[in-house]
Image 1 (spheres, rainbow, N blue to C red):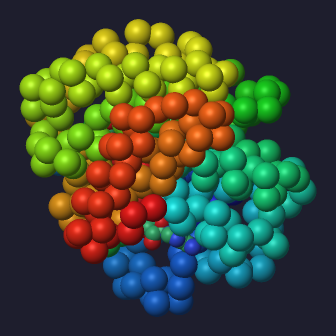
Image 2: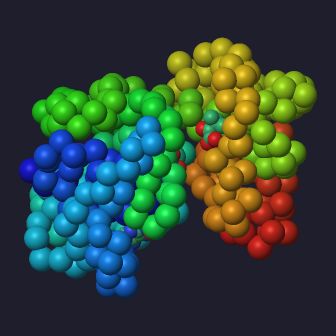
Image 3: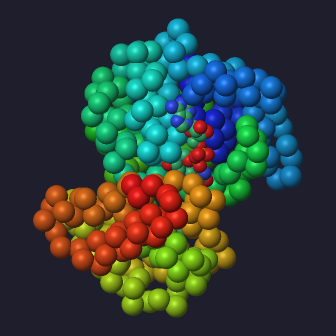
Length: 303
Ligand code: NAD
Ligand code: KPL
């Protein structure tokens, strides 16, 4: 069965090239005739891995192409994902599978609610990739992809295709817990790196701030029905900071490059959930407001 990939950015290209390299059928869906033309002139998708550059001439099409989609990897940013799926919705077969690669939470639920006839598989990825140039991706960090269906059900047989393609995968029966835990880590670390304009490791100079945020996030996870995701959260925040001490967080990189952040699906989602639950989280709200003000001053979207 063909893998349709919606969005040929960093992660979409990383998946598409590895699937194509394994000889699996892949088609890219690009947003406009101009992007399609640029792609064709680039001569396919490039993957740089361990100083080795390979190019793959993967077929590409527009969202309104006539063929049916049975398996779709949605590889857009969280703020683009629902609109991107809506452009191919008429092509989805009944029971089509949508793999949602987005960071944070909120965009996946919006898609799952709007297209209930599809099987939505949520993915939490710790792989790292970025675009070196248009249509050329650098595989910057090996990691793991956890896939799961929040409604339960069996693991799909095509997971073996990911193994064949060398895409590290684990089927998770607790995918929401994983996504909430990652969201909490991102909420404790990323906004502070933006506001202090620092590498992750420098946050160790602000232990009191990290402690109070971890405490509020832990209470939020428990109140949201995800107690396992709250286990030992503060220590995990400190462990991730130490393990990634020399890195700039993805949010700080976005801000420095003048790119829209996924704030609405991270801190925004955390604060909105706390409000819905009637749970007081004053430090998280204050952090959200400071971050939004910081983005506003730089002319970036605040949600
Ligand atoms: P990206 O910006 O590199 O790629 C997104 C692509 O989607 C862009 O090429 C954009 O043009 C395309 N797109 C947007 N709307 C579209 C539409 N309507 N039709 C077709 N294409 C459309 O983003 P990314 O870094 O690949 O991140 C994707 C998601 O994966 C994000 O939620 C991110 O947080 C998450 N993620 C990324 C990484 C990473 O290392 N890059 C790691 C883990 C998670
Ligand atoms: O996932 C991250 C990111 O940069 O987005 C880290 C810093 C590891 C945790 O927030």
